[in-house]
Amino acid sequence: MCHSIGSNKIIGPGLEGVTDRVPSPYEDWMAKWIKNNVGFRKSGNAYANQVFNDNNSTTMPVFEGILNDAQIKNIIAYLANPPKADAAITKEIQAASGTAGAEQVKTTKKPWIWLIVVGVLAIATVVLRTVRKTLQLVLSEKQHSAPPIDTNIWKDFKRWIYNNKTKFALVCISIFTLLSLYGWEYMWGIDVNQGYHPSQPINFIHKVHADDNGIACLYCHSGAEKGKVAGIPTLNVCMNCHKGIQGTNPEYQKEIAKIYYATGWDPVKGDYTNPQHPIEWNRVHSLPDFAYFNHAQHVIIGKIACQKCHGDCSSFTTNQQAATLTMGWCINCHRETPVQMEGNGYYTHLHQAIDKKFGADKKITEADMGGLECGKCHY
Image: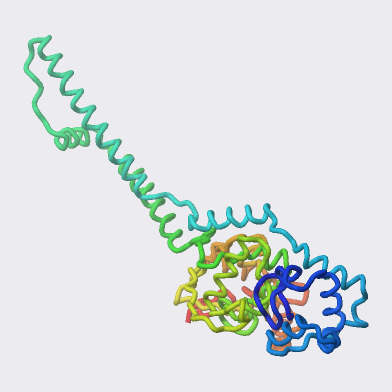
């Protein structure tokens, strides 16, 4: 709340290198300061009064009677030997950054593959036709017969069609079927970006926050329980913690420094005295304008867990689109997910009418309550 173990100032100064700053022996000076800094200053200690004056005369709490000598000794030992960066974590972050930079999207069939196939077949056709013509000339010379009539590819093709009408019809049907299937698959995949995880200006790692530190989803995405949009948290939310937390890992410190740069925070002065630089995040999820989705209805009323749509974010090193989020995906959820009948007083009379219609023993889903009507999502 008051100090960081880095160099940044919060209320009091950062404690990085504090054992080198205070008078020697640092154990004695720090023990007196922590136990009763007020009495220590009144005793006339010059450095104690300098620290007090350099920090806007902010009085530090007196811990005498709250912390015993062993606890104070442990605090001093911790500050003298702060935690070192975890090499394994550094490697994980660097790997995540490299993967995010690739901005991978779900692998799909590319049109250029078909262009290459068509090109190869066209070249093979020309080569084989030239070989055939050459062989015919050689044969006519040996047999002393008239040379073959000079034709072009189009004339040969029409002759083949005339002589092989059934085969040509089958080929046409097969090509039309394949193109129709490919077109159908391609159109279903338009704007379906499952697995999409672009790089971001600040490499926010959900795993570190949601898993390692147990921060709830709604702490940052408070809009999810109050309205339509969950929203990207403002950097002020980040600063609630990162005013004091700079991290001990160099990779963490580099990303946290970007937050300071964006918000204009001066970690030395402990104030927003620098210019601000707004962050332009790269969007991951994009709901079409013709579709309506309300987070609060699903999170609060429907009691749907965030992981149902967004996957296990606590394991993500880069934010990504976990589900397809297509219309069919949503409809299947409406068909399969039971309606939460308890705890939603506003809907009690509706639930009672549903129970009366279908019977109390039936598993009621959103589909039974009109959840498949077009107007529910498109209006």
